[in-house]
Amino acid sequence: MEELKKDTVEERSLNFLEEIIESDLASGKYKTVLTRFPPEPNGYLHIGHAKSICLNFGLAKKYGGKTNLRFDDTNPTKEDVEYVDSIKGDVNWLGFQWEKELYASDYFEQLYEWAQELIKKGLAYVDDQTQEEIRLNRGTVNQPGKESPYRNRGVEENLLIFSEMRAGKYKDGDKVLRAKLDMAHSNMLMRDPILYRIIHAHHHRTGDKWCIYPMYDYAHGQSDSLENITHSICTLEFDVHRPLYDWFIEKLGIFPSHQYEFARLNLTYTIMSKRKLLELVKNNYVSGWDDPRMPTICGLRRRGYTPESIRLFADKVGVAKRDNIIDLSLLEWCVREDLNKRANRYMAVLNPVKLVITNYPEGQTEYFTPTINPEDPQAGVRQVPFTRELYIEQNDFMENPPKKYFRLQPGGEVRLKFSYIIKCEEVIKNEAGDVVEIRCSYDPTTRPGDGIWRSVKGTIHWVSVEHAKEVEVRLFDRLFTEAEMDSIPEGSDYKNYLDPHSLEIVKGYTEPSLLEDNSGIAVQFERVGYFVKDIDSTPEKPVYNRTVGLKSTW
Image: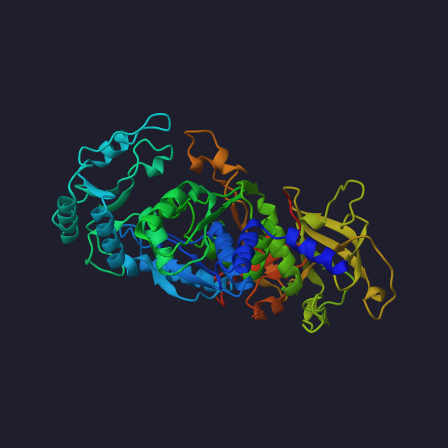
């Protein structure tokens, strides 16, 4: 009975794609699972692609199958080797390895031959209409389209003109090849869709061999079929494309790959449009594709997100059939969960005020040895120097505090983390009334481990002035001020919602052992948040990016 109950629970926990795959395997429809991740190399991948990567590779791995990485390189005017290389790097960084690296351009000759076959079957024709004429004659959702005057060209004439298109006889936009379906179809995509267009442009792999290029809807399903893809998994906006996907496969009589759709990832305070992200980069609203405020995978990596945290996020989001919007705080929770277990700890002061311990011997230095990571007993300890003059955070002191304020205040006591209890005796201000120095006494009997234990409610962190290392700290926040960017008023410019305070640069001071950390992942600045060394960092000028705060402020 317990086994039955366990199996029933596991069965209920399957998402709809897992249910389909398990049914297909159980029925013998497929002996193995083969999925694919098919990005167009016209930009850098973002967190939405990361979800798709985790899903395609994860499903194949779960059921003992494999995944191809196939580049949909059918538009030479927008694609580049730079994007190909970045995509491969991102997939590898996320922890996945593809079975085969393939390109839609690998299949250009076969796709051309299949287009000729459709012409011979009377299912495709060359259209001389302009792009605008085709658009106007397509009709509307409530009005059927108008057939092209070239729709009934003879097979031989279509074959001849199509071969002339390939040979470069015509200019861009002169002619297109269209499928012959139904101009009154309720699905607008089924109203004689375009299969090929003329583009005289250099292709990053095929060079100048081709001047006609297949459209996505024509190339996608046939590429899946050529690779024997068993489960072609797309985001939900492609559900209206599925009938066309199936139509090509049926009419050509080729391997019956099938498309399944899941809800795309929509994230608060974020845009996922490649076009808009490219505009932000080109117009210098951000520093580049890898700007830590960008939702790109390379931006998240530079910000300190780990592959494990993104895979955890994809798992938490799950697989749904209906679009929804996910709060960015879930992604931040996932990186906290991962870094809390693995990040080394250090003290850093980002908004310093000097604290002087008046009864501590001048010129004396002692060392405290807290663990590098309390979550990992094997991590070891670090040496933290303690001296008479320290830096503390300005917001850890308040001259006129409210009730239940447990940090430093005049006449009040706190413990300096890992070290002594101190008492505020005097406050020094400048002419403007700003606090520039806090003078305290310390209780030498309260050293942890060998003193007299007594408890105080407040604990604050600190850095020795003499030993402090100066660092540049970049405090990143949400790129946009509006949570649901897809819901901004029609006609509004999305750039009007850019947050002018999404980046603040401050000068901070850290304990010296931070600069010796070569763990390769973000570290925790105790009581502040998680930070990672930036690629701009040099030995002379260390730079750290804030990955995420210790707790959500949203």
